[in-house]
Image (cartoon, rainbow, N blue to C red; front, side, top):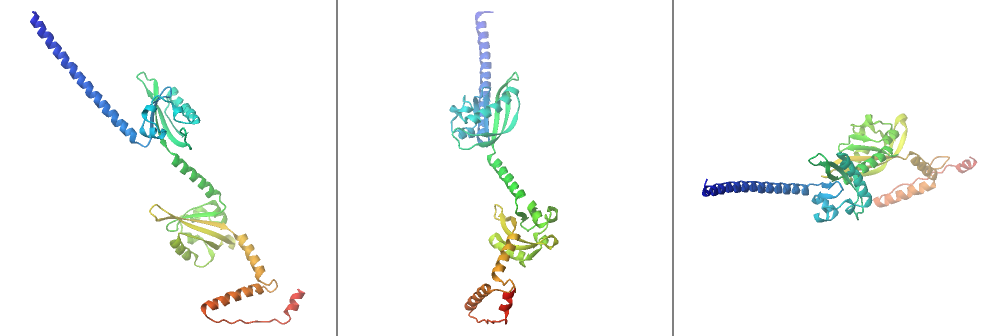
Length: 337
């Protein structure tokens, strides 16, 4: 083979090699661009979700955090990468997080737990539901952890408020009854059973007016419905008859609960047993206004009623009659008793 042929062959091989190299380079460039585009899309997704996403190495140094996490700490990405929890949380929180992270990094466990964290300089702890999982290298060893944390503080606070409300509901000395918008009973507390004698199975699902035998005032439910429609609330005293015809004086407070659209959702009534107080007050009033021997109104009540009648007649521009009766020798009889 002469020299010119060798040169031509080498030129051809070089051209083919260059073309193959350029093709591979183009493929790598395209692959790199696709990877960068994919990474950009992933970062965009992670930066828009309402959860804190982060990656740490085995030494607890941050390798990645999403935007919501950076906003929580008030730093940019350059001040995150390479730093540990001590840079962003108070000492107690950082210690707790590290202890939790070791379970993932040392044992390869995936853990879902609640964490109470306080950022550095923060005034309150927030509650997070965190899922942390190990990231493995090609050899199957744990080289990092991925964490996703959601702020559930409001939910935890709401659950705590519900728990406290349930304790109050179950342990209150006041009877509590809850009805729907149609006045069908949907719940009662133990005090309601203790005061009225009605059990939950006897009242739930029934209109309140069917099982509440009122003695006074007459037409109570019609009046109550009108007042609730007008004002949404009512408070007053009623007499209630329970087992063995026992009369109870009850102080009742009724309030209306509306939904977000302003529609009636529930009504809540509280019953307080004020029988002893009412009877005592009535006895005191009777003693102050009636004669102990005859049980007739005394002078005090007489003048009070007379004054009331005079004012009523004056307003109505009307007349009224007053009759005076004298019992002969009653004073002598009264003095001997």
